[in-house]
Image (tube, rainbow, N blue to C red; front, side, top):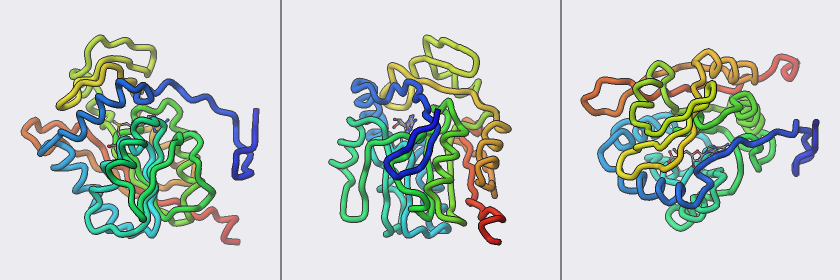
Length: 248
Ligand SMILES: C[S@@+](CC[C@H](N)C(=O)[O-])C[C@H]1O[C@@H](n2cnc3c(N)ncnc32)[C@H](O)[C@@H]1O
């Protein structure tokens, strides 16, 4: 069934799966974990990669999808453009506003499947450790493509599908239902009492971007920057292509 969103676009009515980060307890666990993580994967790999990507993309406006408690807004070294963080958890948005909101940065409650933003409003979009929490990759890619300007850049950091088994070793009380895995995630510093993870294949991820006009330019696997040698993460970078009929 199709409905009209607040920007007048016809969209398919979509159901949002459960997101445990919207639960207050899990939100607070995440805040405690991410704010106390020091000299681990985030500082060694994730934030430097984010800074490098943003420097090269040089967007006037960047949107982060699933911005959590907002820390990535503060880790883009040298970036002085406008930043908009979209996040479904009200508790996390409140914390992001408390710590990071300023005249160039704001945080809005919203979902990757129905971004509360107009068409072609940004030059770049990214997500860090969000995509493996999403069941409907096609809808998320469609929304990312909708808000990007033509030639807009995108960057997704997520779990490397080649290392799902290694990643899930840190989970407890696992329940599986097809691709869906539910369990307690022993994230660094503080565990998340409930976490939901979808084992999408790399092929499914690539297909969802490409069928929505998002061309992948590079995929890089990377580790925690520690000694394990395991490439737990993957960074996908690309560009929104201009459809040929729009050029005619
Ligand atoms: C592991 S946290 C990462 C937060 C942030 N990106 C960071 O790296 O600090 C995962 C985030 O994905 C968000 N998330 C999960 N499902 C989502 C959805 N459907 N739309 C937008 N965000 C979602 C969660 O609410 C949570 O904030």
